[in-house]
Length: 178
Image (spheres, helix red, strand yellow):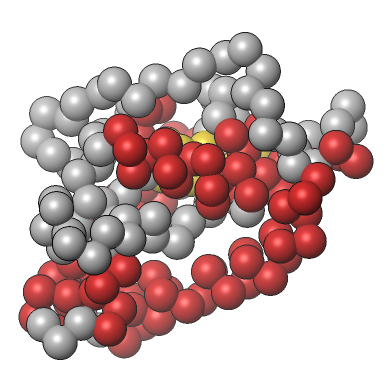
């Protein structure tokens, strides 16, 4: 795997988003406003289908935890000036790696963990002025970042990167509108 992929997945967006979001964590609402999120979905080929909103952790076209904005931003303009394509850090942290090096895209527990952590506490900060798009992807296990098994770790990063790339291409084609 090339260095830019690993850097992108491991450090680039994670550091920037974490730095901006820590200050907002305390003011984000934990209440889900009566709307339920569907976690019972199954891909046909174990890959995300970005035409299906279930494979977006955040999207302006559905309710998701990124819609819980800091209370100072409530009742203000949102979803208007720009789009944010948000890549969340891995939440597949079980060192036993029950699903192998990459998380199953349909894993209900991991998808809930992602939504109730990084989507709620990090992606929500952008909702004052932006439409937030955060694709679900087959996350590389946290162990891959320091793995002695470089070949398996690199393959896990490649899988995660492939999903993110496919999601971004889907976003450009269907949602960006130039």
